[in-house]
Image 1 (cartoon, helix red, strand yellow):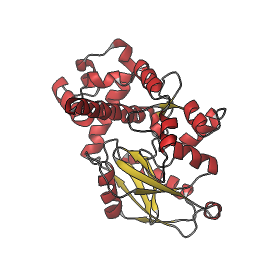
Image 2 (spheres, one colour):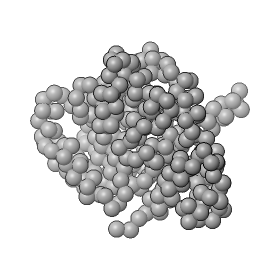
Image 3 (cartoon, one colour):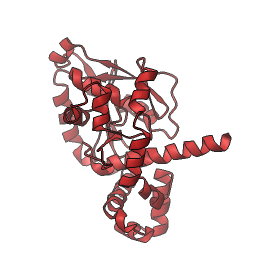
Image 4 (cartoon, helix red, strand yellow):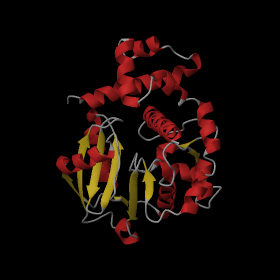
Length: 291
C-alpha cells in the first residue's frame, strides 16, 4: 500500500523528533538531524518548518524536561480554573468547541448493539488516522500507519462489538479535513460519543478542560476529579482514551516533566505537544504585538 505525501512527511518529522529527544542533551546541529532522516539540511529545515511552524532547533526547546516542568508549574491550577469556569457541555480545544454524550449504562452493557459506525482512513499532520463517526458524534480517532489499517479496524470492532461498521471515506474525510485544517474555527459544537466506565468518562471530561499549550500531571487530574490518591487509575483511564487529539490525553505528563506513555507512540505525543507549544507561543506573540 503506497504512502501519502502527508504520511511520508510526518514519518520524517517523527524520525527527527525521536532523534532530537534522544540527543537533546548534546544540542544536535541541524546537519546531524537532517542526516539522520536522509535529507539535506536545506530540505529538512524547510520540511520541518512547514510542518511545525518553527525551526528544528527551536522545537527542541519544547521537548526538554526543563520546559515541561515550567509549563507544569504555570499550569498548576489550570484544571481548577476550568472547573470554576464550568464546562457547560462544551470544551475548547484548538478553537474547536467539543461537546460530548456518554452512552447510557444499558447501551454500554449492550456493547452498542444496533449502532452504525462509519469509518475512514485519512492523512493528517500527525500521520494516518482512522476516524469513526456515528449519528451521535465522533466515537473514535486513532493514529496508525497504512500498514496497520487492518489491525486498527479489528481494534475498532473489538471496542464496539455490537455495532455495524461501514466504510465511508467521503463523510469521514470531510470531518477530518475540518479537524486538522490549519485554522480550526467552528461555530457549531463538535459532538463526541463516549463509551467507557463512569470513572473513565470523568477523567476524559477533565482532559477536555485542559487548554492547548497547557500541561498537567496525572496527579493533577486525579485531584481535579476529587480522587487525589488515584493517579495510577487516572493513568489507566488516560491510556484507554479512544478519541485521540480531540480528548487531549497527550497533555498529561509525568510530575517530573517526563512525557510519559502514549498509546500512539511517544514521538507522536511529543509532536503534538511541540506543535501546540509552537502555536501557543505564536498566538501569545500576536496578542502582545496587538496591545
